[in-house]
Image 1 (cartoon, rainbow, N blue to C red):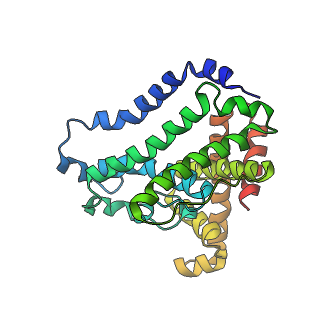
Image 2 (image 1 turned 120 degrees about the vertical axis):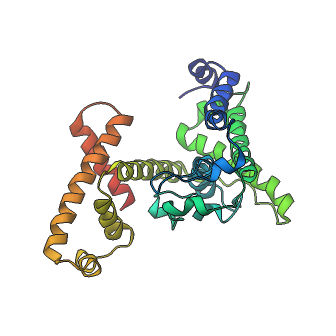
Length: 280
C-alpha cells in the first residue's frame, strides 16, 4: 500500500505535482497565446480540427469519463459539449462531424477557457486531498484496496464541484457520498481502462473503412449481412473484410497494450482479449 509520504517521494512534492500538471495543461494555451480570436476557429482541411475544438476536447474527456460516470447527480458544465467535443468515442454517443467543426461559432474561446479552468480546479483538489499532510493517502494504508479508495477521493471531489455548481444553477445539491464496494470500484476502473485502450486502438487504425465496419458491427450491433445490404455489396465480400478488420484491430489493440505495459507480446495479446471481454 502506498502512503502519502511514499507518493510524495515518487512525485517530488505536492507543489511539484501540482506545478507539473499545471505546466502540462498550460502547454496548449501557451502555444495559442499569439493567436487572435478569429484564428481559433479556422479549419484548414477536414482532417484537422480548429484550435478552439482541441482546447475543449481533452477537458470534455475528463468530464465525460471521470466525473459523469463516477459522481451521480453531476451536472455537465454545458449539456451541448458532450456532442460538440466528442471525437471518435462511439460508445459514448453521437458527435459533431469533424469536417464541420470549423463552422461552430459557439461556444466562444472565452467560454472554453472557463470550461478548462473548471475541470482543472477539480483535478487540483484531488491532488490536495491526496498529498497534503495527514491526507487521504495516509488513511488508505488500512484500506483493502488502494484503487477503490482513490476512486472514492475522485468521486468526493466531483461531488464538491457539482455542489458548487448547484448553487449557481438553483438545483438541489447532491446527497452525501455513498462508497461502493471494492469489487464494484475495481470493476469500474477496469472497464474505464479497457474502454480507453479499445478507443486508442481504433484511433490508431489506418483504414477508415475497417473502423466503420467495426463500429457498425459492435457499436450498432448490426449483422454482417445487414452491413452488406447497406453498403450494397455481397455478404461474402463483407465477411472477408470483417475478418481482416478484426485481425487488424487485434494487432492495434496489442500495440496499445504494449505501449502502456511493455513486455511479452503473447501476454499483451492475453491482456487485450481480457479487456475486450470486460466490455462484452
